[in-house]
Length: 284
Image (cartoon, rainbow, N blue to C red):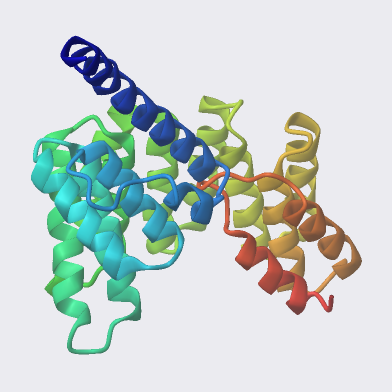
């Protein structure tokens, strides 16, 4: 009997971690499908595993619970302090909290956003995601919160070395900040040429032209996106968003938004709640 119990115990010691690993894989898969409630049901909220803590934080973040997301990303970073991705997500979470905080709390939260974005880049200087978020912070934050055009320019140079297309996009944002729309357009076209298979680069140009009131040109670029990236939810949402803002072709906008709502999307796509809001604005 004793030998039997030892054998069973040994087997369980192998099977339980394997089962948990499968749960984590399944939770990550559900997260990528934006089924956040189901993903949350499979994770251990008392875990000490930094990867699991990061996943829980991302689920909380995408569910809009930024306070709890902060808690889990902080635990993940404590458990793995050299992990750039944990620092990046912690910075993003403080950033979202700063956006909705009151006048007294917002500056402190913004400073934490900056601190963790800078830490993420320090831990991984070749992380395109960390550099992009730090660039956005420097470009948009006022000087008293650590922002600044020259700081953003230096980060744009770093981005260009790692990812030329993203570097051109950063240059376009810098040009728009100076209201230099000619150079902004040129940079966006260069970004599209540098990454012809990235739908986001085409949409960046289409949205820019729409914002400039160049409707026919914008429509032509959207048509290019529809041809080259058929059945892309990102294209449907971006075009519908422009049509709703311009208050034209609202019937087409409603069709695109409904198609978006009926399709699987990822956490990198706009939330379906945003599509529902636009659908209401379009008169559905």
